[in-house]
Structures are given as C-alpha cells and as structure tokens.
Image (cartoon, rainbow, N blue to C red; front, side, top):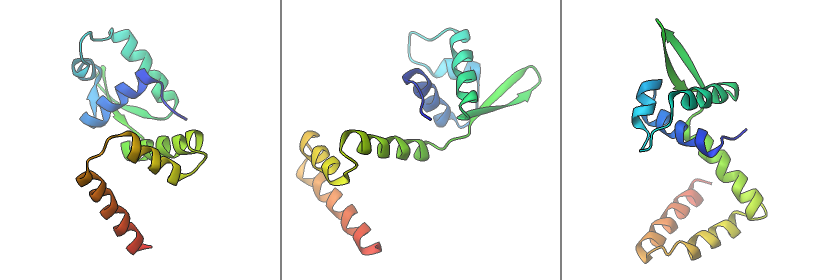
Length: 121
C-alpha cells in the first residue's frame, strides 16, 4: 500500500521527528500550514493503512511511524523500476545516469558502490 502525496509529506515530517504531537507536525509544515482537521484526517487515513500509530498521553496523542523510511522508499523504488523500466535495473540505471547530469566524480562514486556490491556477491 502506498501513500498519497499529502500523506507522504506528513510521513516525511514524522520520520524526521520520530514521534510528535499533531501541533508539532503542523508547526513543521511549510507555509501555508494545513488546518488541524486536515492533518487529523491524514493521520487517521495513515493509521488505517498501518503507517502510523499513536500513544495516548492524557488528552493528547503522540504519533509515531510504524514503517521505516528506508523500507517505504525501497518498496517505492522497486515499484517504479517494475512499472517504468520493465522490471529492469539496467534500464533504470541507464536512464538515471543519462538524465540526471551526473558529474564524472559522481559517476565514479556510483561505480565504486557497484564494485563493492559485486565483491560481496
């Protein structure tokens, strides 16, 4: 299951803070800040999707992520490679290296990362 753009933005804020009250999340938004009811609706939808949960502290709720950022990003990247690049990491790498205007140094760094992974396999 994935998040909408609005949910993903809120999730990014929660990942950054690790745990937060709704007022802290609203404060972290860029201007114009959303209404509290909007954030409450997003949090409820994300809770229904099992992305977040909360701990009740008195009358307040402290929200925390149930999904790690790395796990979410990995799943999204794998889905993108499957959907847009015929499930081919080579096609993705070709597109990525040609279309992002990487410097020679950045390409060398990528090559080193790949070489390190090859040694481990």
